[in-house]
Image (cartoon, rainbow, N blue to C red; front, side, top):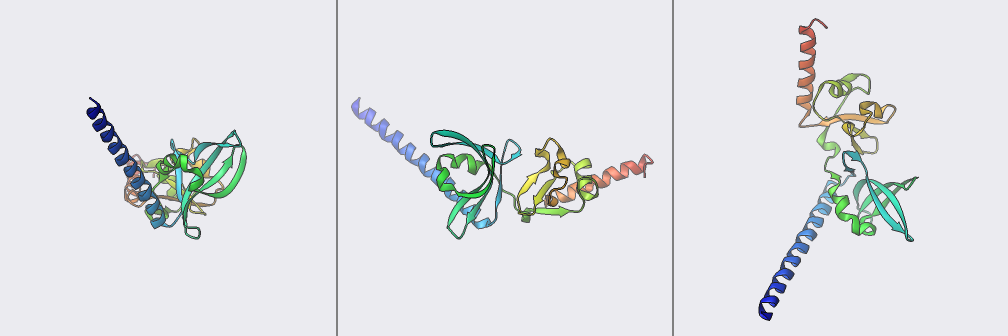
Length: 197
C-alpha cells in the first residue's frame, strides 16, 4: 500500500512539473511574440479597451487600468501601460515583473492586431467610408489612435460617436476590407433599385 501511494505521489508530481513547464512555455511564446512584433498591442477585456486589475499597495487595494503591452528594448523587458490608479489618471509604462501574479490575466487580454493588419479608410463619424462601414457593413470597424492604440468601435455604447474629436483614423481588418466594401455597394444598389439614388 505504501509503495502504491509513493507511485501515485510521483505520478502527481510529474504531472505538476509538466503543467508548470507548459505554462512557462506559454509565457515565453507570448513574450517572444510581443518582442517580435516590436510595437504596442492593445489590452482588452469583455469587449472594452483596457483591463482592470486590483493590486495591494501598502495594504490598500487600488484598481489599476492597463490598456497596452509592449516590449521595452532599452530595458529588455515586457511592459504594460497604466492609464488609471483608482480615480487618478496616469500615463506610465510598468515592467510586467512587478505584476507577476496578474501575468495570466494580462497575457490573455492581448488583442493580437497591429497597424499592419489594418486598412485605414477615409471619413469620420459623420461621413465617408468609415461612416458607411459602421452603418451598412457587418465587418468590425476599428479606430487607430495617433499613438498606435487600436480600439474597436463595437466596444463602445455610443458606437462611432464615441470617437468624435478623437485624433486618429478608422480602419478595418485587411481580410475584412473587401467584404465591407461589397456590403456598402450592395446597400447602395438596393437604394438605387428602390429609387433613392
